[in-house]
Length: 231
Image 1: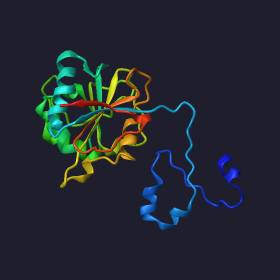
Image 2 (image 1 turned 60 degrees about the vertical axis):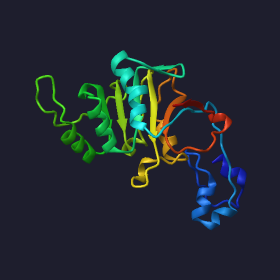
Image 3 (image 1 turned 90 degrees about the vertical axis):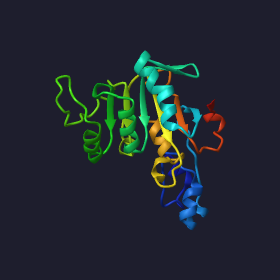
């Protein structure tokens, strides 16, 4: 409202986005956007997210080596002096999530899933979890956002409108270029920002996320400086 008042009577419409999408993307689609003014609002108390970059062609292997094995075997993992006890893994590929669960023998008690309902049925069919009495698990319960299991896997079904809370968790984003499955590569200006904003707790790692990728060639701004890991 205050912004509209400052602009005066000549403004008839205000387009606002909480996600800082560069206006050039709108200009590609709509020529008339070229003539609009752009105002950037910086909210008080806003904090930058700092990526810990892991560039690799072996994303499943690195996820296992850096995160899954240490959490399963030691109860915690450490990367670049950042220690965490749980991992919130954003990966827009249900097939890769299923393979990761099966190949690492992750149990139902270790895994939370925030995915589409159809994908839950696929996980049940492919993974074939059993309870302590040996019975097949036929339904995946919704996770408790305040009491996450050791590994929480999230597809695009959970990128928006989701709040998670755990002081000892680390956000992990797996995003890589695949010519056949282009949806696996997340848009850094929209989807990536939505992913890393789901964690609402105030733990030591709240401003960091691990970015496992094979494609990022751009430079983060000073506010989003990067911590490189070369493997």
